[in-house]
Length: 240
Image (tube, rainbow, N blue to C red; front, top):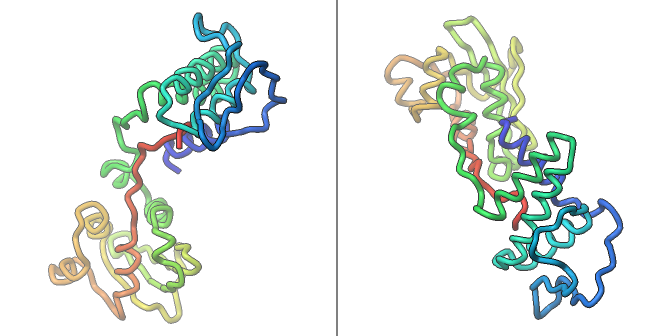
């Protein structure tokens, strides 16, 4: 799994948990979320200077206000301050990174990724097994719902045989397995396979160029390739 996805998943689990500790009583405060207002109003909540200590219940309360109205600048600022303080207080690097990432997003929005974990150089460095797992991970499971496919992949340059089986929106791969009745058998080299994945080369084009040999109905293979998704690594973590 790409590091950005793992990190984002950890942030979501930490920051969106609402079962941390009992919520403290706040006097003279209006409800955080009502049908007519989504503002955070608490007369006895100091705004300046910033809180020296912040507990998890306070952060949870402010997170609810941000979710009620993500455009409330005051609520975002208070939540960012709370997460920043929790980040300074925690000893765990995982929790500290999650808190400080949340504070950064609330103040400046999601941060653009400088480098991609699935760039061409990374893909070229993958083994065939990782490549098939990579394809399975990026498969659009909604569009492949109900589809079935049995594809035999033969790499002539490495003498490898792979069985690809699509069922229940999951693409499984098995090295060395020979399918008895595959929908299609595709014989190609690894560079030809990478040309399809990275350069957008179409299967008929490679067949015509003599780089790929196809036996059977290639539609099942085309359905798999056509439903490979590109994920956007920039998304909200602590805001809706």
